[in-house]
Length: 186
Image (tube, rainbow, N blue to C red):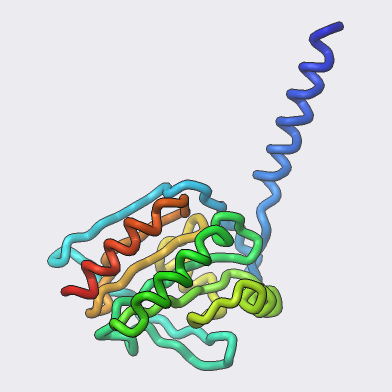
């Protein structure tokens, strides 16, 4: 009889956690993405081994077309995220700080929202995001192997992929800043 409350508690805990993890939000493309609470993948590519980016054009929240190849000469961080993603919400203040610190040195951040436009607009306003927020597509997300969010892809000045990160954990911003500084110095 004493075991019943413990068993009941465990069953409820498993149910709650299972519901939380198995009820992923859907993007506007009805695509389900895994939310990464830790950095699951970190690829570092040496300068001479970097792959050329697949060019893309997306529309930002102001209706402006943004094309990656037009950013040649800049270091660009493209961050795939969604409004319902807890690690994305934690990551945003760090991205804002990095953007503010390095935007005048040739660094740009593009937030690629994998959510409905209305939700993105509300989120950008609430979090006071100044860097461009683009309306993401399934095609672009697939081109950059976005299997979980947030996913950050850092491009060098020649539009080559320098770093690819999946997930976010506090402390990662220090590594990201180091990577940005290295690329700006090239």
